[in-house]
Amino acid sequence: MATLPTLRMDNLLAALNEAEIGQHPVEVHGALVGLICGGVEQSGKAWILPLLDLMNDGKPLPPKLNVLVDELFQDAVTRLSDTDFGFSPMLPEEEESLSKRVEALSLWVQSFLTGIAIIQPKLSKASSDVREVIQDLSEIAQVEFDVEEDDESEAALIELMEFSRMAALLCYSEFGPAVEDDKPIDLGAIH
Image 1 (cartoon, helix red, strand yellow):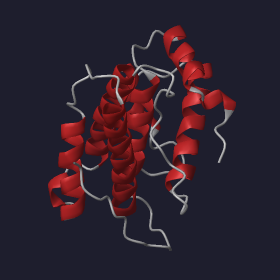
Image 2 (cartoon, rainbow, N blue to C red; image 1 turned 90 degrees about the vertical axis):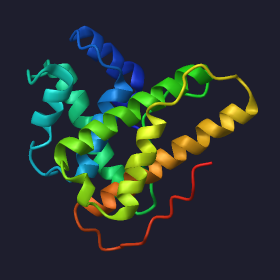
Image 3 (cartoon, rainbow, N blue to C red; image 1 turned 45 degrees about the vertical axis):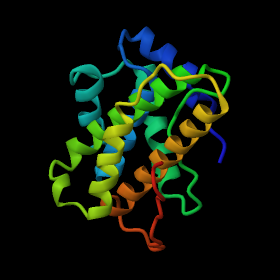
Image 4 (tube, one colour; image 1 turned 180 degrees about the horizontal axis):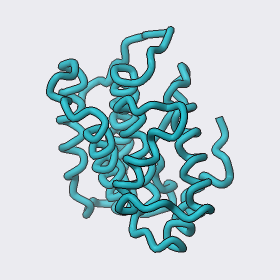
């Protein structure tokens, strides 16, 4: 599934900067995905108010940014509900330094956890698998940004990104709309 050109991170960053909203695109995506995976109503605009509370103190977004965020929401819903698991967190490309990508993953996970907690305030009553991945994600959110630029660190980041992706899918399968093809999601273990 190709990414819409308007969903590219640099376009979203430019629109956020233009609107003077001090959020990084990965934070916006993480919060949106958290809301979706928490079970926010996907039809209509029920998702916009909690997102506006998180990213703009409840104030409406400028039209250009609003269109981008709406497209981002629709794209995330489509990818999360894709049985071929087309979803992945919005993160910088591999050309960015490893530290920047680690920081971006941490920001994405923090925002994801905030988004899901807003929609699912009783996460303690979730399945044991979901409670466990939420705990693991909270540890990923606190990862150190200053990492060595080596193959081992790169492999560790890829593993954390994949875990975060699968954790989001697990949460979506528990809290999102019922899916006909309910296959269990195996997250593996964090090493």
